[in-house]
Image (cartoon, rainbow, N blue to C red; front, top):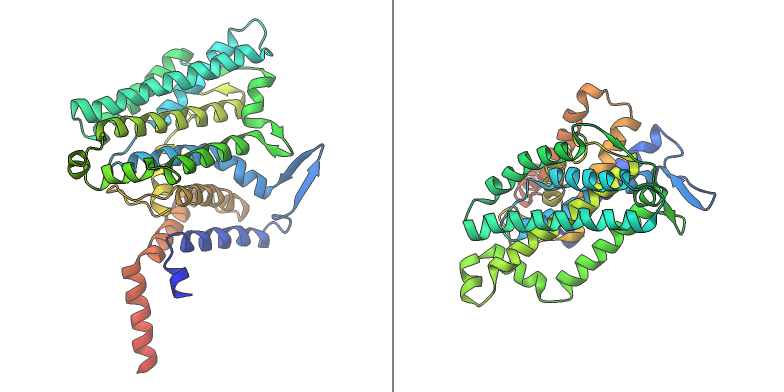
Length: 336
């Protein structure tokens, strides 16, 4: 039992279960899942659907942080990807054209990859600190999205595009299946090959990794490209779900939730060892926390305070030093 409680994912999993169970007292049918018209419906499905953009962004953020960097521009990349896709789809003579939607999606992801290269070059070639380099795109990127949409909300009515964020396949939301595929692919690449070890080596000691012959610069650029592509897919899911491109709302402050999800998942901000599973769990936990605040009727003006309290409790429970102090005092009190 002691070994289990020391696992990095134990306490986040416990808090997630407690959050979900607490909803039952206010919504007795919270855990019920029904099948209607070949689609699964229920609060748990809603938790998974709402967490998909954050899970994607957290995956990319995990790899970037593992290299010793950080990416504050992911929210802006989400807005740019959604804006470009909706702009191209809106100009189609037939918005039901699968080929036209596919071209828009590829263009949005391709542009995001270019933006990821831009971030990586600023960090590795120019030598700008990651937080400053990505802050540049965070600010400028939101402006680029506004220019693409001309400061307006672009509405689209494309059934193929709607499938990305609001469609179903094999009774499950398409967005959940997309995220699951990305998670599996990322896990295979980082844990079934040497890529994950190389990334951790770059984050743990850039100098030592360079002396060992590891191409730290290329790996770092690749990490920023991966983060940008993940953010683009998240932006497509967000825009598809609301059938529009909202440059102000898309990805607004999601980078902060992504960093929080990474930390909850046990990845250190100093770089090195990382946990994709932990980041996914952290993202789902944050989504469950948002839904719980509405379910149990937390007033809107105290929602952020409630979230902060839960996060502080979770972080303290993950701290080995804090647990040691608490349990030591209990042991001393019992022996006395």
